[in-house]
Image (cartoon, rainbow, N blue to C red; front, side, top):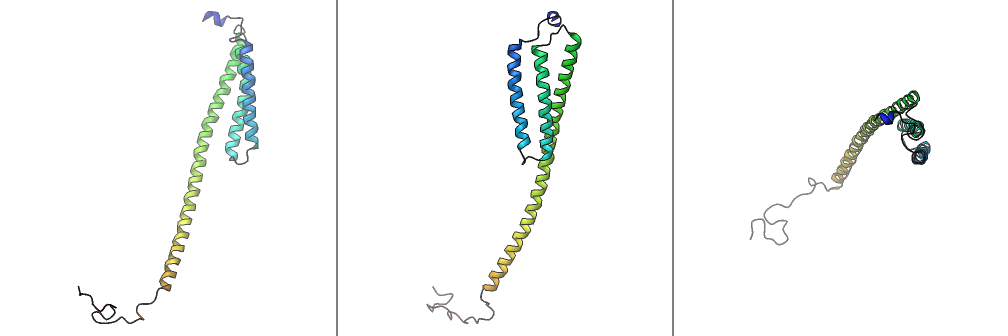
Length: 165
């Protein structure tokens, strides 16, 4: 471990670190571009994710510099760069937590809105069903106005009556 602390070489070769950093920058910048063009995303979510993307765009070159260029023998610069990296990554993680909390808030808001819509639609459905029942009852012939035939078998076309077998 002592040799690492006094090393005059970077932690990893630059030919390994820099291409990966470039690829990471391309992917994160494409992600940020997509976020900028997405108008269906809630503004609060877009702001959080854009800020997180900007921090990642800042952290990536710092991480590449710390791993592939910076030598541990430059103790003050090494400490400063790694402290900055840790601080930026902490902010990215905090923004991820804020994004999760914001998602819960948006979900609760949507759920409340949907619950209100369902309540309103149930009321409208009850009115429609009541109107349909009233219309159906109004269309039925009134049994009190018609006289029923009296006596056993009076209305029976076969003439058998109720109790006949």
